[in-house]
Length: 481
Image (cartoon, rainbow, N blue to C red):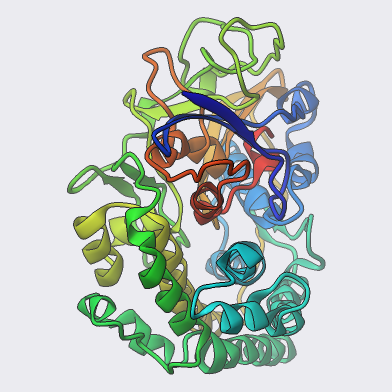
């Protein structure tokens, strides 16, 4: 048995390392460590409830809208207010723009550059991939930043700025959208859609939504052969990415993009079949985290976040969230599976979650969300209200804000006592996916996905491990709050 430590990882938001026990050229056990502690839960104690809207977006610079939205929903529940219909549409557009930007950048700048490394130089596809996706030097790097700016322009129009907008409030949104803003939103989203269809997918977005998964086995992409999706599918087929990084087989989603007609993506659990989600069954286990033990696994409404770097058995500043005592994979794959997207459903039934299915779930989500955003823009009524009156909070109340960020299920649990924040607990998507072991010794989703990954003799930074890690698109600063 050989033990190696992989990390730090570049092109990952925050600090991450993975300890691997290797035997026979395969990973036998994995231990995922995020060594950075931040303490946002302590920062919020004793503050006015509305301060959460200023503090929590600063947990992360790339998914701050998601943090803002979860906080606003928790505060709206605490104050027992319902925003007007326009507010839901604007909030969906803001969150959709941020989530799409994350998916887009993940594929082009975080995930694909690993295949442009010289260790693949003998592959027949290497020259094409290197020219297109090499970090900083590839043609994609020069294009996608400008295209991403169109999505962030949407966020700027609706939120005033990005990141760390204060435009999302418990009673609505602060920016009324008039006819001129609607034109600018349509134009920005149209430019993004055009790039996706011409360069990323190589086909109409609706055509990808109807793509037959059997065509993957035949070597066919749903669009043009020179599109970036086709390049990825060729590499995935040659490297058998569908056999790499299988997760625990249990998936969860809080549901995403709710409005008067219900969520765009359904809430639920998948464990071989869809089932309702009972959030009362969520607990956090700290037995292998650098935290004081407290009273054992606790629901986040009762959660405690007190660091203890000398904790016996601890190896990470990440708690271990569990649903009914079991780990769950969250993210685009879980959302699309639970919502019944045909391609993702077929891929999971065939081979579970893996590197290929996680990446294709992001493609499916981009295709669906862009079209939904176009509908939300058209549904906005400039003459109707966008925000209700200022809110007041009870002296004693508990509430929660549950949403889907780009990387998966994000929950904020709030307790107000004597008019002040007494407790504020956050479970981020990567906390679910990069959780350590629990009291029963059950590994978290990434720890399970890494088991069986190939490690070549003398390989200190195993490329297969990197592909698996990046397929989850980790955000470690959110993970440790």
